[in-house]
Image 1 (cartoon, one colour):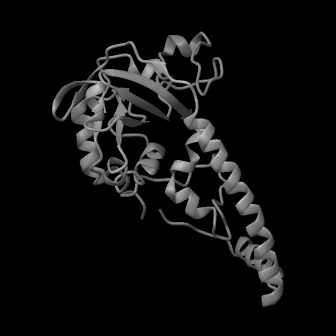
Image 2: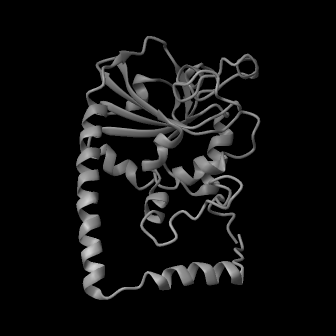
Length: 248
């Protein structure tokens, strides 16, 4: 994707930056002040993470059968040898010919995590409603290796609040991110976490919408550069995002 920056914008941006240039002592003082805030934020984040882990569990009683590259599997079988499972709810409608570009933006961060997570007793997979052949074709195009399974034959995506029928949407019954009737499209993203004890599976956590933000490595890196995400003037925040093989 070619990016054109007008001369006027460039002058305004770099003029703003030049006005912030200070001597070394002033910069160091400002950096130390921000460091105190960063440490406070990190302590708050650690406490929030603890509260996530301390949430009560609920048993998953529905027997879901998924299509996988190794045949049909139940939800407990998706854990493999791990006792914890992270599911990325990847937006891929059965009638689409490609996965969602924004979900692809997130998924680019996942491949390198699978092995590390497995070493900590955690499995990571993506689940979508599209049929398995479409998932594999798209995964090959993107160059990913993480496990991806199809929930086309079950209600998993609906039960965990990321897929909605048109009837639900029209009736205002499509509840996304724990809000009533706010979904306007049939597929939306999310992450859900499960724990397994024997053959029993428990749902421990789910997050949606902006709750997914911390799990996008590129966004976290953009947050530390001077221009940040630079999305304020776009029609919508991720208008600039492309599948990684679509940038010019």
